[in-house]
Image (cartoon, rainbow, N blue to C red):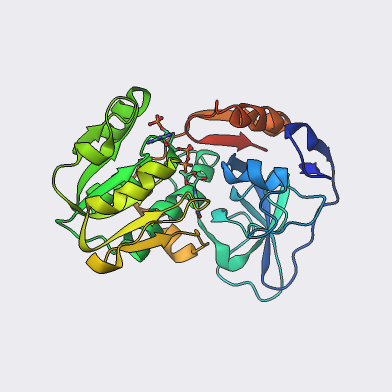
Length: 312
Ligand SMILES: NC(=O)c1ccc[n+]([C@@H]2O[C@H](COP(=O)([O-])OP(=O)(O)OC[C@H]3O[C@@H](n4cnc5c(N)ncnc54)[C@H](OP(=O)(O)O)[C@@H]3O)[C@@H](O)[C@H]2O)c1
C-alpha cells in the first residue's frame, strides 16, 4: 500500500510517500481502508522528534491521528463492526497513523461515521472534537447558565468548543482575530474579543466559571486565572505552558491531554447528524501533498482544519 512516513526526525522534507506493507488485523483490531486523515499541529512536533517524551513513536513512523474510512477486516474477538461499515476514530498517538491506504485501529477507538456529511470530512471531527468536549465537560465541568471564556477560539478546537458550550446553555465569550471573528460568531459566541487589538485580560468585565485556553501566549495564560470565579477552572490545551492555578481562591488549573473515547465521539457524531454540530473543513489536500501541509504549518500558514484525502 501507499503511505507517507518519516525514517528520521526533522523538517517537513523527511516525509516520504512510499510503498509500505499492508498491515494485518490482530486480536481486538480493525483494519480500516482510509478515506481521509487530517493534519493536527502536534504532528509537526512529533515529526521533529520533540515529542518523544510524552508521545514516543518508532521509526519509520506514519503520521495521521484521525481516521475516517471503511472497515476492511476484523481481528479476532472484534464485535459490533462489519466489513464495509463507515467509521471514524482518534488513533493511538504512538502507533502508525492514517496517512496510509490502510491503518490498524483498536476497535474501542472507532465509532460509526456521521451519515450527513462526506466521509472524508468526518476525519475533521475526532481529535479536535474530543479535545473540545473533554475540556468543557470532563475537566471544566461546564453546566447550563455558566459563563465560559474560550481564548484562541479561531482554530478547529475553538470552533467545536464554542458550538458545544453554547449548546450546553453557557454564555460564551471568545477571542478571535478579525479573520476568524465571523466564524466564531456563527459558531455561537455571545461576545467576541479581538485579541489583536484588545487584551482579553481587560476586556472580560464579569468573572467566568471556566476558561478554556487554546492560544499560545504564556503571559496571557498566566493572567487568565484572575478572570475565573472562586471554585472555577482554567483548562489549557497548549501544554508546553502550565495552566495557572490559584489555591487561595480554589481555582483549578488543568493541563489537558486528549484521550480517545468512542462513546464521547459517538455523542459528537449524533450531534453532527442532528445538525447541531457543524464540521468545518478549511482545506482538502491529497496524501501525496501532506509534506506541503507540514511546510505551511511550520511557517504558521495553516488556518482551520486540513483534511488529508487518501482514497476519497
Ligand atoms: N493537549 C492536547 O491534548 C491537545 C489536543 C488538541 C489540540 N491541542 C493544542 O490546542 C491548541 C488549539 O488547537 P487548534 O487545532 O484549534 O489549533 P490552531 O489551529 O493553532 O488554532 C488556535 C487559534 O488560536 C488563535 N490564536 C493565535 N494566537 C493567539 C493569541 N495570541 N491569542 C488568542 N488567540 C490566538 C488563532 O486564531 P486567530 O488568530 O484567527 O484568532 C488560531 O487559529 C493548539 O496549540 C494544539 O496543538 C492540544
